[in-house]
Image 1: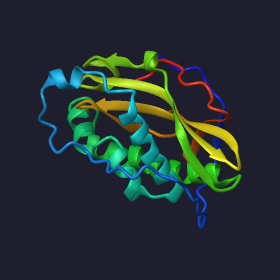
Image 2 (image 1 turned 30 degrees about the vertical axis):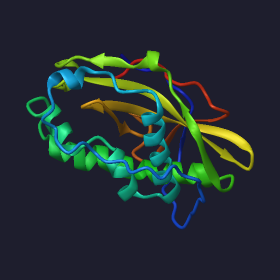
Image 3 (image 1 turned 180 degrees about the vertical axis):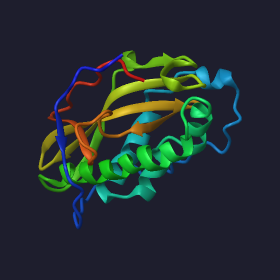
Amino acid sequence: MVRSPRERRCFRVPSGLVISAAMLLVLVSAPSSFASSSTAQNVEPSFGPSLTIRVSHLFHAIATDSLTVGEPLFFPESAYVAMKTGRIPSPVRDFQDRLLVFFRLDLGAYHAALSAHGPATFVGVNANAADAAWIAPGVCENSIGYWHVPGVRLVYRVKGVVRSVAVDSLISWRGVWYVVHLGPNPRPANVGTVDAPSLGRGVAGLAGGC
């Protein structure tokens, strides 16, 4: 399913920008093993505090423009290779040269967007659990099924004004939500791109995609 277009804004990656931010200081770590049962993979991840904590750490990665902070929140390479082997020509190269490169560019673009009006603080998450969908094995060039949710919104405040941006696509691995596309996919150009910046909390979604 092709998602309806939403407002998008593109930024070339800047340098030297700093945001002060109040963070939830909770360690986020990837699961130690990907050998869990397929039953565990079928369980829809939580939309509760655990998602808020993960998005708060994504905000910290954006605030510091840090791939080191953001990478534990990004879909694991080993999981991507497991999903895509036999479905696309080179899963490792696709992960390294496309997904991870876009994530790095998008971190810079989101950093510029959030800092454009002054120091930003994290407010919360605007997500619609009804938008989550199970993507069955064999769909979207994947050999392993997973949960997907589009357009989860990262909500923040600058100088008393609430604003938000979309996280284009989260997918699950062993019951945990991970970013797979921070900015829009596809996008108008191969540069860091902020998905649907908005005043206020914005509207989560739209449903669809994979």
